[in-house]
Length: 181
Length: 126
Image (cartoon, rainbow over all chains, first blue to last red; front, top):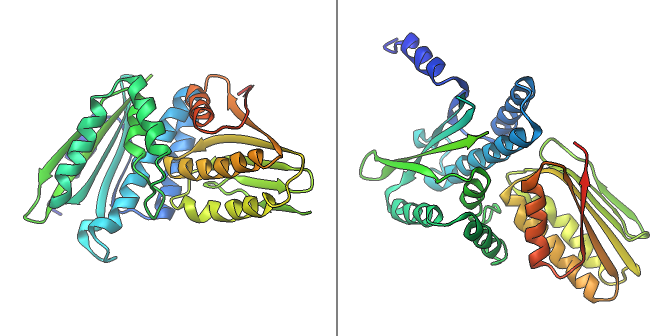
């Protein structure tokens, strides 16, 4: 094994990672992750308000990964179906980090969409959410483009994201969400 | 007249629709990955109910969590209720939220702003 597992452990420990996963995102996996995180939040005796916010944002982050998997790699055995997810709590702030492959041709439009969301105030986000909710459009799975707006609205923070080039076909998209107390 | 119900799961709510009493309740969590599939039967029942509704229709929405995928489906349900309200059945939507859950209250207010049906915001203890 080439990996230095202690180095991994130490990094996770220092970032106070509560749960992490790398691999294919399935519906069953999401059910398990949500159950584990719910009991962890209960054990930490978080205020119901914080618990709900973290849980809600977590659902959106994970379902984003789930819905985009087929888009990027329809074949079940494809390596690029793999995604990464981590949640940790540092200095009274929850951090949710996700990473997944994205087709190069979709980078610019996603980037533009996230940058546009980041320009909006709290009140503008509310109006934008209602407009998108009511525009009648819906993806086949029901996503409908509300996820990122909802995350921005619920956290009250700018969406922190990055695209790393992988090869001529793919980039790796990462999203770092902060939820403050 | 019949009562239609769907048992809740960790990701989907319990739905009770008593067409004889004009009472619909959606309770629990609504966080399925595929919400269109889940809400389709309810939208169909409402379509059928709209043909001969009761003089009043009471709707309780008591959700602990719902995802954005469900939010569009819930809007579809409310749009059916809006049509039923226009068609002569007095519809009231009771939107429950736990005290301190501002996000859930705001979500109710978002729907209230879009849908032309009387909403009652009902605060419950945690």
